[in-house]
Structure formats: C-alpha cells, structure tokens
Image (cartoon, rainbow, N blue to C red; front, side, top):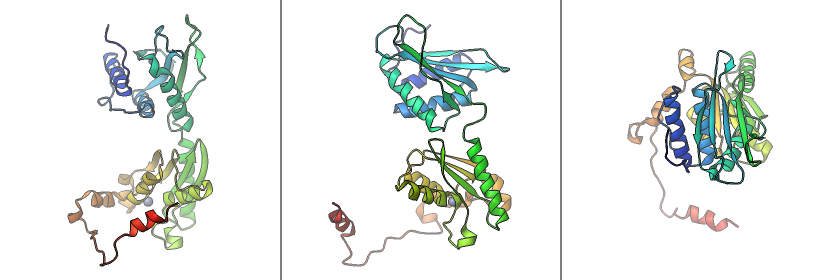
Length: 291
Ligand SMILES: [Zn+2]
C-alpha cells in the first residue's frame, strides 16, 4: 500500500496509473508518456485503456474539491465476455478531477476514441457532490463505418477508371466531406483523396482551419496529405491499407517519406535559396498591409 500523496499533474497521474497497471498484470506496453495537458492525458488514458484491453474507464471524484472521499481513475477489465472489474484505481488530487472528467467527455464526444461516455452519476457515497463518469468500450472501434465509407468511395473510383483511393472527413461524428483520388481525371498531381476532402471541408466550413476534424483514408496518406492535415489542424487520421500492402501494386509512398527524411544535401530535389538584389522586404510589406 502506497502512502505517497495523490499526484497533482497530468504526467504524474499517468505514470502512477501505469505503475499500478504493471503491478496488476495489465502491463502497459511502453513507459508512460509525458503528458503536459489534460487533453493529452485524456487521449493517453483512452489509448492506454484500449491497448491493454480495458472494458471500462471511470473517472470519479468530487465536484467541490473537498478532501473526502477522494478522486481518481478506475480501469475495469473484462474476461470471457463477463466484466470482472479487475480494477486499477489511481487516486489523484481533487483539483484535477472536474477538469479531467470534462476533457475526457469532450474527447469521447469528438468520436476519435473507442470509448463512449455515460452520463455523470452520483457514486452513492457519503457526499452528494461525489460523482463518476464511466466510459465504456464500444463493440467495434468508433469510426469503422467512416472507414468503410472511404473504402466504398475508393472502390467506386476504380469503377470510374480512377485510382483506388478515397477519403472521408468527419467533424464531431458528422461526415463533412468525401473525396476520391482525381489525379487521372483532372491531370492535377495534388488531387489526392485526402487533399480534396480537406479542400471541400474547408470551403464548406468557410475556414482554412480544420481543427478537431478526423480523416479516414482508404490508403496510407502520402507526405503531402499528411503535411496538409498537420498544417490545418486535423486531430486524428486513420488508414485502411498500409504502404506495405500498397508496395507490390506501386501504390506506396514510403519512398517519398524516406526521401524527405534524408538531410537536405542528400535529397534528389534540393531547395536552394535564390533572391535577386533589391527584392528584400516582402514580409514587411505584408505586415504593413495587415489591419
Ligand atoms: Zn496524398
């Protein structure tokens, strides 16, 4: 029995939870990652729970910050269909509970975790302000239907004479846009399914930012699409077919990833600075034009 005080930072909560999981025989496959924010902790908890096969993840505590009866996380494991509630309980500081619980619920509502949240419920304890929120693992991974849709788009594109790629862009559980690879039909080398899905979504949402959106791509995204997704704030991306599976068909972009990971001097396409005299001040000009 540990006598140390409850952790007060996201990283410490996760580290302690991992320790307890190891002791309980549910070894996390890697050392606890450093998580700086509550959002990152929420993400890490869900992925840890999913990877170690937990059926439920419960956050419990008081909403008042009183010292009793505590706050913490419980991971429950199921066995052969029956939930055995082999629980790993990790106490944490009261101050963390309310904000962590809110972050976890927001994360689960975004639909990019395998866990769905129940309503906050009283724990039936001594204190009316004590509540818990239980996240239950969904029967099939969330998003599997969106991926199925991306693959349907890819198959339809084959029938149209196009390349076997489709993408679906989702925000808060709703499909915002879908697209097929159109490079052959348009002679546009950038007309990848993911790029077109981003373009359609940002036009529809009237914003160049797509923060919090999720992309489901039939094939492993290429570096161009991955960069575009990173730059506009896509929060998660899934792929149906890997580069390894695409390689025998000439449908892998692994070579481009390799090329970009080399030092600049070793790359085939070199980027060389070149500016004519008298052409300084472009960015100052832009800055001056801003309202
Ligand atoms: Zn691409």
